[in-house]
Length: 359
Image 1 (tube, one colour):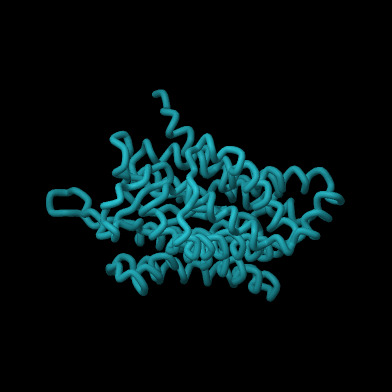
Image 2: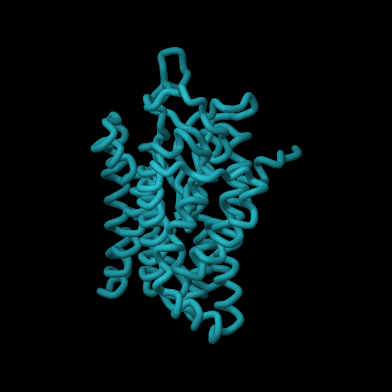
């Protein structure tokens, strides 16, 4: 059976965002937390700036700048610093398991500030995911690991804030445009770290240097583009389900690249966390067997803008991871970018799919 280009793009995205976690561990050796945080965003920002005219990225409206600033500060600046800081002591694969719970926080924020309904499944899933994160946090058995694990979980929290903050922007912009705006804003806010970045590029050995450039180009820049291509052509269920593969793939890559083996307790917590996120994103079934449409809808990474008279409340349901931004995010970040369940309506060829997250 011949796989479609969209499936290959989805697989490439999963691998890109999963590989970001071990690449961070290598990059930290030459750049440190501060230098790596800016270096990765700087490389990604330059790459996206070069590609932006060819990708149809428009100049944002002035009234949307405050929300773009919030996205940049949380999903890019804070996410990078916290994740890099946490990975000083937390293994790469374990960090990916913690970042995978980011959707919990976007769901809770949407319920608190947007009035989105919290179902029984979402409550159970949220409790399970947070419990899984707590298990991972104590799995290392020593204080440095536990502290760093909570720092990585804080990175998951700010990635959840990022996905929540993108919702009003996704009414007017594509997911790729929002990711570009946030990336550029996040880079700007980390410019005070420029001396550390320059020192890293001047003194780092080959492996950290290549890993840092890899982080900016592959998981961050290329990851956004191929993710948008995939979700525009595949169903929401397929795209979202694929993101659950990011932590397992990260564990495999970390083992092959860094010889990292997570503890059994961390794996148990990771399975619990991913199961909780799966429950959060499970859609209820109608009596006829079909899925009940979510109350809020939005647009995914390659949707074209809605007409000016589009429904203002048409937002995306937050889901990772990335992860942007890893993930950056992003990814999971954020470098898990989390995904949101949303529905494109701007172009006849568009299908349901979540917007880019950052790992």
